Length: 254
Image (tube, rainbow, N blue to C red):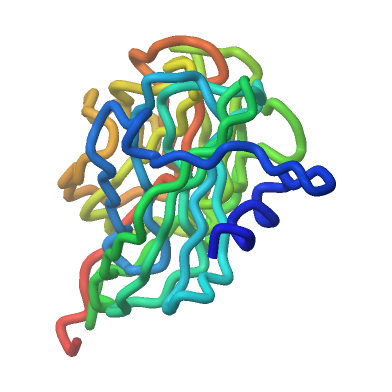
């Protein structure tokens, strides 16, 4: 198992392997895993006492098979880690292991943990944003961080502005007027704490509906075709969103 770990991390050089230590030695907070309500992705959050490069391997059994790293365009090591675990199935138990490399080459490996994704919603509210067209955006960091990624149903992709901070915004067209019951703005963030939206505003067909905290379920009852989302307050930098959900009304037939 140790040799496999070293090979995964790419730290075997000839016959001399780097030291491997317990991840708990540098762990500054509990590992918290928050699955998406649909059970298709999850965000892992943990802080370390050292600035380091971390990854998490995970899967349905001890062969793992999947790996996630921090979505940090700055690269390099940091202490606040938030990798997004994609490719999950609803109502499934997964095992995972944290792995990190410190600047001195020391490898830190955690014990194997588990988490379970929630069941897929039955008769759940449709995400109207999946069929929407992006009609305007304040800026995009690059094609890889285009605005469309905030509305693709994939939390492992993201829209990032090019340093817009509190001035970041994006607008979509639903194609026709539809009843919107709820919106959720899931912020992206950088390892250094920047690029984190704190509150966002919603405008429906030119009417401002208010300012709300990110990562919360904002209940609405409005019919609209064009929706605009503005970052109102943030930690500055390349603000944007992992995903913006626009939920309609649930199917009463289930």
